[in-house]
Length: 252
Image (cartoon, rainbow, N blue to C red; front, side, top):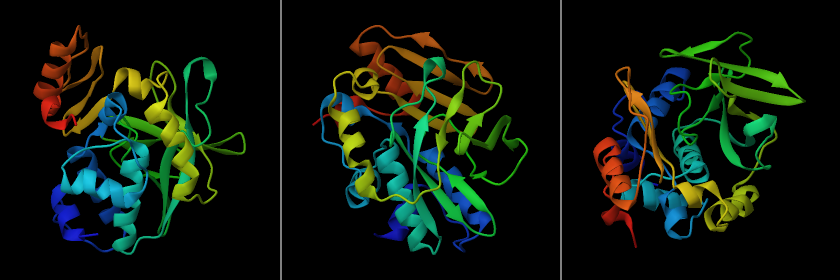
């Protein structure tokens, strides 16, 4: 890995000491520059969870990715900088109180003086690492989060949402190999939401925008942009105008 090139990709020029301040600054920089991007799934392009492949895609080609790609790659960067990082398996909350399948999400544990849940691959979630051992709600900008024990594991979630938003995770160390099968399912199964709706989410200093095949969700500067999308041209225009992605440049 060319660390300097990676840091340039996320626009980071700050402190590199492996401490809480650096971790928070790196996560924020990453989320503000690298989108959650499931477009390859939609177009049938093979998706790899291996960090070396993600480096080429994200750093060399200036793309985004989804959780296996982004968090796996970010873990590699953090280790290069001297952080102690563990891959974690998580199950996002679904409708009707259900959970997504095992290994449906890859998150990160970073151990410093405290234990931090670190995540640059869950789209619309916290810009800052979350303290796993903090018993009270945690504030990130104007949003509130909580990490708490649940069902023999932990739940990380945003508070005040219409439906439960976040995921359940445990602290058992995982390897990249553990996520290969589910990554393949999400990127090849035609019933997968990633293939059907091709979600792309980008964080901004003043908000978040998510664009799917059929809708725009989110807003900036307190102004909501929610609206349905009809047809390919509207989808392309929304990606270009709201997130800065030109679809024609990405397709194989």
